[in-house]
Amino acid sequence: MDKYETHDCDVLVIGAGGAGLRAAIESSALGAKTALVCKSLLGKAHTVMAEGGIAAALANVDAEDDWRVHFHDTMAGGKMLNHWRMAELHAKEAPDRVYELEKWGAVFDRTKDGRILQRAFGGHRYKRLSHVGDRTGLELIRTLQDKGVHQGIEVFMECTVTRLLKDGDRVTGAFGYWRESGRFVVFRAKAVVLATGGIGKAYKITSNSWEYTGDGHAMAYLAGAELIDMEFVQFHPTGMVWPPGVRGLLVTEAVRGEGGILRNSKGERFMFKYIPDANKKDFADSEDEAKRWVEESIAGRKPTARRPPELSTRDNVARAIYTEVKEGRGSPHGGAFLDISYQPAERVKSKLPSMYHQFMELADVDITKTPMEVGPTCHYIMGGVRVDPDTAASTVAGLFAAGECTGGMHGANRLGGNSLSDLVVFGKRSGEGAARYAKQAPAPKVDDRSVEEAAAEANAPFNRDKGESPYDIQRDLQDSMGALIGIFRTESDMIEGIKRIEELKNRAAVASVEGSRMYNPGWHLALDLRNLLLVSEAIARSALIRKESRGAHSRLDFPKPDPEFGKVNTAIRAKGVEMEVRQMPLPGIPAELKKVYDDVEQMKMPGKAG
Image 1 (cartoon, rainbow, N blue to C red):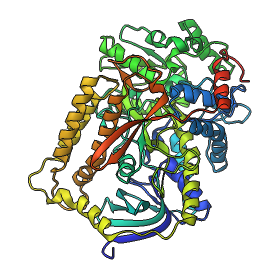
Image 2: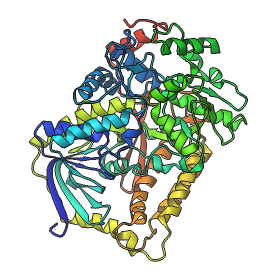
Image 3: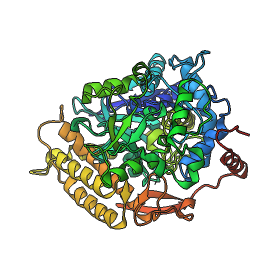
Image 4: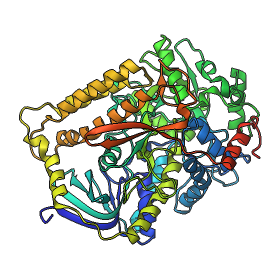
């Protein structure tokens, strides 16, 4: 231990996005000595890409909204595969977390009478998303970062954690390295909170930035924790498709929330034909009715019309665009046209400033005059570490998790805007859970042998002669995941995908890098490959045993949902060197909450909550 830089704390938070920052703030406020580690620079977290808003039933625009309707919409969007308790806590506590952000300095857009303004989003029955133009995630990070820094939380930037350290069955720290120098560092902690985000870089076309390599998922799994629902990968329907250098970059759902229209190459507004029969009562069935909803919304009146079909759930819209392209009705670069140019230019620039500048600067497209070309992009994973809803504790002592690296909250499909409220609701709960655990936990012990093993693992790519480049392996992984385990899946494709992943694991085991540990991105990727391959295998194996289509998991060979699969989560854990995949019963929803869901389900649109 003496030869490595070492830091001691009560609670170590890995990841400095919305969940990690909120966890660190809560842990520190409860008196725990808290350290925050981030792979990139502070403020660079992927939370900033959540542009459209944070979902919470404030009822500032639609007075009928309340937590019950939000709970219903979240469960319905997740196809009832959500953990009911997580959905309940989220719906009830999201308003308090939004007002807390406001108290801490977040500057939200306002209604005419000064309240926080809210907009419509796919799958939400009412206008529920509090927002700051289309830069809401950026404002959330700025607010939490300022709060955390002023609270005196110790921050370790550009530090990658590669392994969790344990004392017996208890997590007691982590091993990592400084990205700039390559020097190794050890953190001893009574409790660890994972807030590492998602897995997007397993796919070539993704809205996710380079940090999203499944680090938390993989480290938790290797430490003995259980993962659930890894088959559910959300492809956001609207990413940029042109030019090639920015393909996959997110085009916020706020464009559709503000009235953006989707058309194919024939000029057809195609989403009308893709609304599932069970949801048709909630959506406009003609262009005239959809137009009236937009006009009433812009005028600040409560819409008497039903929502436009573009505000269907993300999984549904992504499949619709994919199908239009597949059947030959796509845009010139393989997407669809998203048009908001029919609205006044000043309104578009005011409501969607980031989108206006993004398309002008990156694609030379003026969205106030011309439609955008958009297509599906890997955006979010609903699966992750299985945690206790109230405390965010994993199945391993001393290990907690929050945000995208956890499973259960969103079920089979996440609603837009629920990610930001998820981050602050369960970020707070994870920080509280970790701090309370740390208060009664003994001093952390870190075994010298496990530290040396972690160091040897990190150094291994330098000790291999004439091995393959890690970039070639990642390229082949991304191609395989996109082609075989993408938006639509079949048994034969997934079996082939698992076979390729096994081959890629063998290739990664002998991948080599040159040079030193200083400023060496090839080495960084060589270490990330372990995590990328692990989460890719977990996605493929989970998807293979779920023989149905549900939410973001769409199988051509099993195109309909199966009621029996609606009763189980897919769980994964390490069994020796093998990945054990099993089905576990979904926690039963209490009768009183089932009644809440059913009461909202029977409401007519527009309507009033009971």
